[in-house]
Amino acid sequence: MKSAKNALPALVLAPLAAGVPRLDPARLGEMAQAAEAALLRQGESENTLRSYRSALRYWAAWFALRYGQPIALPVPETVVIQFIVDHAQRLNADGRPVNELPAAVDQALVAEGFKGKPGSPALSTVVHRIAVLSKVHQLEEVANPCEQPRVRELLSKTRRGYAKRGALPRKKPALTREPLEALLATCDDSLTGLRDRAILLFAFSSGGRRRSEVAAASMENTRREGDDFVFTLQHSKTNQTGTEQGDNDKPIAGRAARALQAWLSAAKITAGPLFRRVRRGNVVAEPLSAAAVRDIVKKRCQLAGVEASFSAHSLRSGFVTEAGRSGVPLGETMAMTGHRSTASVTGYFRHDQAAARAARLLDQ
Image 1: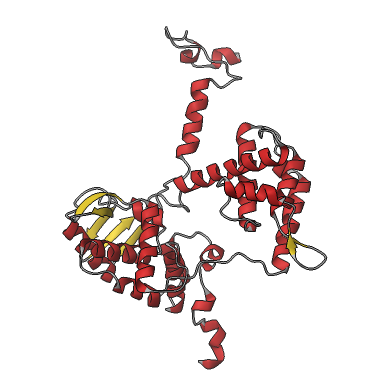
Image 2 (image 1 turned 120 degrees about the vertical axis):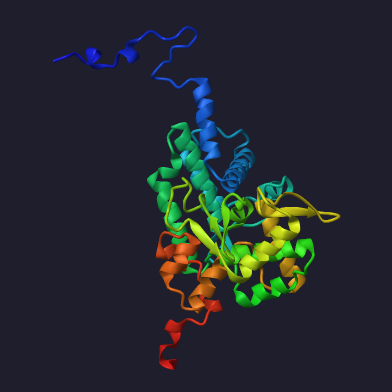
C-alpha cells in the first residue's frame, strides 16, 4: 500500500512559487481574515447590517453606563441577565410594569441618541439585541453567554410572561384594496405621480414586494411578455443565496403593467433600475433607495388622508389579506410572495381586516 505522502498529487508537494508566502494551516492570515469579514458582510442585507450596528452601539453604551468600563468579549453571563432585567418588563406587587434600568441611565441613553424615548423597548428589540451579541460571540469563537441555560430559561419565561398579560407585538395594518385605491387616487399624471403609481401597483401586484426588492427591480431583471411584464426576483429574504427556483418569476399584469409602462415611457428608461428619483424640472436622476420607497408610501398616505399607520411592508400584508378575501388558493399566494411555509404567509393575514369565510360558514 502506498504511503499517504506518496498518495498526494505531485502538485501539492511541489515547492511554492517564488514570492508566495507559506501559510500556517493552524492560523488564518490577516488578509484572509479581512476577506472572510468582507464575505460575511456582503452576504448580509443592508437592513440587517444596519440593525447589527445599532444593536452593538447600544450594547456598548449601556455597558459603559452600567459598569463604568468599555465592553469586551466574552461578555459574562451575569451581564446578559442584567441586560434582560434592565429592559424587559415585569409586574410588581401593584400590577404595574417595571424594569431595573435606572432612570439616570435611561435618560443618558436617550440624550445620546441610543434610544428614541425613555422606558422599556419592545420585547422583540431586547431579543434581537441579545441575538446580535450571540452572533458576535459565535463569529469570534469565544464562550457564548447567550447560549447558557440560565439565560435561555430567563428569555423563555419572559416571553411567556408577556404573552400571559397580552403584551403581544402589534403588527402594521394591511394596505388592502380600499386604502390602496385611496393612495393611487393621489397620483396624478405628472412624472412623480406616474412613478409613485407604478411603484404602488408593482409592489402590491407582484406579491407584496419588500421595499428593498422594489428598489432592486431593473430593466435587466424585468422583461416584457405581451401586454404584461415578468419580474425575476433572484435574491430575496427567503432566497438569500439566489437559488434558481420555480417561483422566482413574478408577473406584473393588468393595471400594474399599464402603470409601469406609462412610467418607463415618460421617464425614457431603457436600462438600469426601474424606479428613479425625479428632481426639479422633471429630471430623472439616481435610483431610489429602499428608504425612499418607504417615504413614498408614507407621503401618499398623508396625501390620501388615511389614518392607519401604514408602512411599505403593509403592501405585503395587504396582498396576502386581499388574496385571502378573494379566495385565492394559498399555494398561489405563496408562489407570489415567496414564502416557504404556511405559518409564515398566514402571519401576514390580517383577520380583523378581512371577512373570513371560515367564520361565516352558517351564513352561506
